[in-house]
Image (cartoon, rainbow, N blue to C red; front, side, top):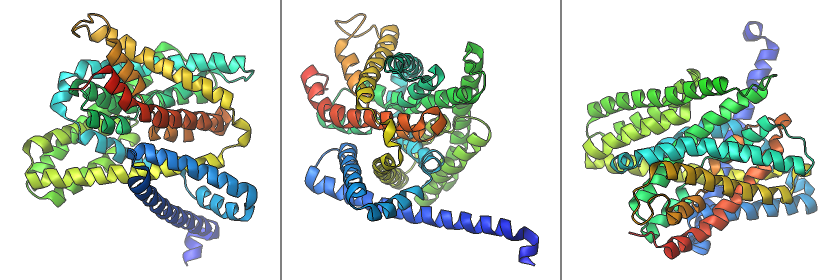
Length: 438
């Protein structure tokens, strides 16, 4: 009866899907164990900021595994099978991304963000758009000079995925050096919103790249962008206020409050995607609304437990993400590796970051004492603190192989590694030298 209802082929598909899901779960457990090991090594031996330490150990792991491929191919085949069981794009974009964005926004000081709302708005929206086009056009020229025929729309796709910044390592360093709050909140607020804006830009350009015409007209881009960005923010605010109503019902019940935030971060993100809105911006907006309510009106137990819960989730998923980054390098085609291109792209990304910070700064911040038009110290700090992280890598993984996906993964890994290790290890000394502490 069972086989007669669903058929043998459908039954086999269900079994295969179940086995794949089980293998992916087992792979995730192993990744979690490796991430824990890396965290312990960093805490006891390296003693670096966690993001920097994980990036260094991830690179060391990649180098070790490449040696295993050369000298012990049978062992490497088993490792490769483990990596191939992981659906990276689904795990990152439809799995942990919503948790990372919600966790980042729920801890934001909303009152401080309100004071810096205009600079944050300009840096996150205008700055991300500027960065996308500067990187897109300059890489298009670069690849042409190197003799590679990569369409402009694909270069803009790379510009969109590499433009969002990750402030985790920088903000931890800023706390140690007591950097002025206005600078910290600019960088933190910009990063949260430019994650969402970057994803919207990426999806918009990706749709255009997939179309036969590759239409890049102003109206087609604007309509796609506005629908996802504005719609995502409005939807996020809506579910954020629904969540605050539920939190009022639970009052001092910390476990119930945590459950409410979990539902927002999972169901809210899924519903936004189904509606064709930006799930990333929805999570940022919802997290700000929920976080503001919890910090102002919730009891002490609710504040402490929800805060600890989301900090732990944020730390766990970020650790797993950096282990994944080290493993994905094993899957790319060695033929796409070009250290010459990577070096030039790193310089292009740094230049684009400077331009995308300087232009909005000139437009909005003319009040700095002694610098009526331009404060080179703040622009320098914001340029050098524009680290790239897991989001850029997650977006690179979703680029189709036919759209130069493997090449973009390699370039993204190079930019992320340079920004986290080189910029991350030197930003503290730059802060001290430029004197922007409180």
